[in-house]
Length: 70
Image (cartoon, rainbow, N blue to C red; front, side, top):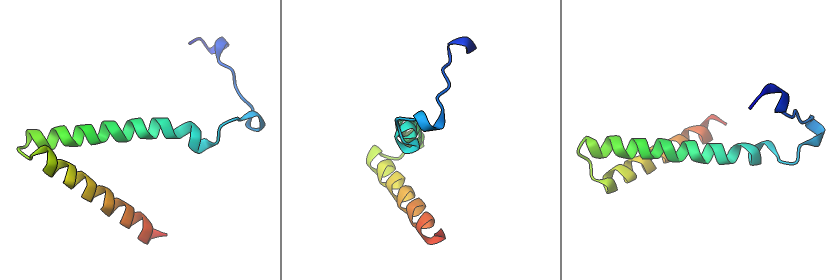
């Protein structure tokens, strides 16, 4: 994409909220990270079920950590 074809949108012209704009990328990155974690755990000898449970536990700890910081 050439710089001349880029349209800069003024803040008052935004149709999407920041969350709506970022959410698809966030979800894609989260899915990629979870896939990599799962692959690493399985290659280390864990079952897929054990790996998924460990990933869920990590997510719970992260959420608890965030909640206690506020």
